[in-house]
Length: 391
Ligand code: GLU
Image (cartoon, rainbow, N blue to C red; front, top):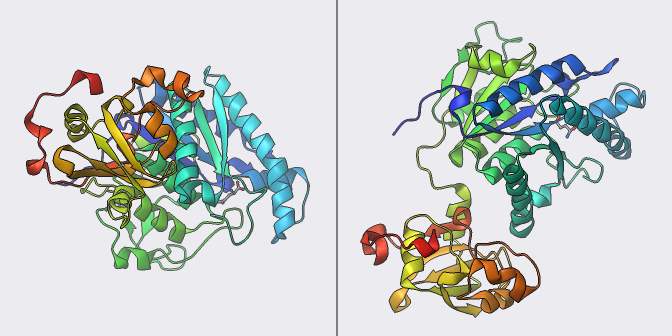
């Protein structure tokens, strides 16, 4: 099955990554007119029912402008200080500009560990989900004030790709000063030609990326292709487009040239592969027939369908799901520590807060963290009607 290019407004959830050079002018500071225009674009997409998340660079660039730091490379502590000053201003500008459309912004600052460690990943994802539920737009950046040289993304291209997979986005748009991928760097090689559609990121495509980056941004085509691998592998399409004009998203919608990377046609996410491939699940959850049917239908595992819990595990650990006759039917990431899971097993989601003393998550294993490990034709419940109790 191949997936085709389509209009931005037909995607469900889009992550837009904005490079520093688009937002910040090194002598005059934030480019307010440009920001207002892209916020108009974002509001237009939202009015068509598209959910938008923003990964905004520019903290360090803006901070060093505000602080009148000299040009050239910064020491680590200087860039941390610049980020601290720049981020607060950057977030305020986003918030003010979106508020012209009555849109509320929420700031999220991530470090590498927040996306790479399962438990912290689940936490960050829950925050994104909650913001989406209340209709606020997350404005995300790396937390450059505490990131160190060794422990950092360093570029927002890959960070944005992680955010896209974390949020279950179906499109990632990377806006920078180049309009897409060329067979060679176009400013060096006049024979370079533009690639409109990339169906698969092959070693040849990777070789085209080179390593160029501009003074303001840390990424280059290399990190954009890395981002493409993360995003498309998880079933999320990616666009590389120029953001140099005002209203760059409407420009894409109206046919401005850009490179489009097709999402992988095999929709099992890399994370699910990781979950299914865990050698030693930390514990197991035994479920009833109703839950088996619900899981086969792609639903989350709710406490109500749990018969018993075995083993010791913490939230975020991989656990096995055991169906009738002791068959392992699925694996997933635990939404609760084993102790709490035991307490709420068999109980209604509405009772969780009272039993545990805190308002936990509704799912014992969220469907995004669950992968069926038994082939569909062997599943007992697959042919039966869905049980409404597990909807
Ligand atoms: N996080 C950096 C900043 O906000 C930008 C990283 C990048 O250029 O990709 O300044």
